[in-house]
Length: 418
Image (tube, helix red, strand yellow):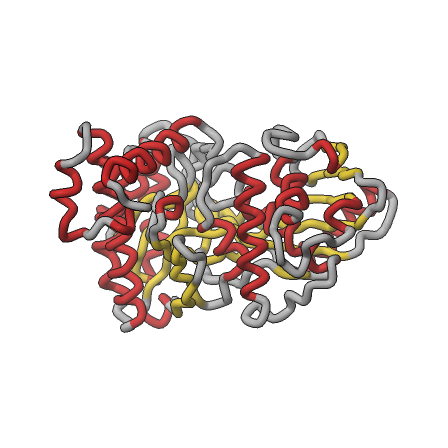
């Protein structure tokens, strides 16, 4: 299981388990659940987004990194079209037929598993298209170590772990992340479709791209128009810095109506402006574009999207030049935009950001879809504990559940473990 360490200051730091032991645990749980051997164990990471929020579904740019915290799946193929899903975290499983899987079916968390082979089968021309494992079914045991509802993409980690397992069993070689990146991009496409169509969550593609395509020691600059990525070295420790992730434990859900409303608002604005997406709006001409929109709410949503895309460009340029400290102001501006223009923050997220700044963080922002979940703070490496302690004190003073802290170490994408 994931290791939760409590320091002398009463702070909870959630450490990721070692991959070999976690994979062995998942295999053993599979044996206990199904009375048979798995064909293997695969895993995929959660992600934290450094900057570029709520723009992946409107042609934007994002700069996520994969976390060391991963979801493991032990899986064995079947030949009768049945899928049986069990979880180390959920008491109830799911049994069903692949023939019955489709938009809106099944419901609940099993959709993030059963939807993947359905979606992979829709991807024409991919090397896994038509593979027997996509129609034959499978047994799978899920063991997740990405905090649920934390805004760290536990759902994408689950989808992507299943996707690499099925692709591997279809004979696709994914061992070299760089050589297999084109296939990983197709798998990400399938996972997005599974989440959108089967699970009914209107998310963009950033989470799946990060989970499948990140490399250790780097983030990715994701172009959400064409799905291309550029790996951006991210060695904050060399600059004397750390990225502290704070899980507020105020749970959120991407399938809620608020998320869909934001996406629909941008789509309507694109239609009103006659542009394909928000990336087509030049930041220099933003005021003129806003004047063409019908109401203040739509103007605020558009202002966030256009300025956020510009912030990602600037952050990537600074990181490429080794000017890591200078991204702090961009993180702050991103949060203010998400708080006031996009209105997806929460009491807990604002408390983390405000407290971290007052405790000496260089910059801080919410990360993920919002309405709860997690925030990040860019801090001096020797100030991690003191900043975390101040956040813990602030939560206690407000009578809120104690937050949990995670190390954000840029990690590798989805792969086979056993």
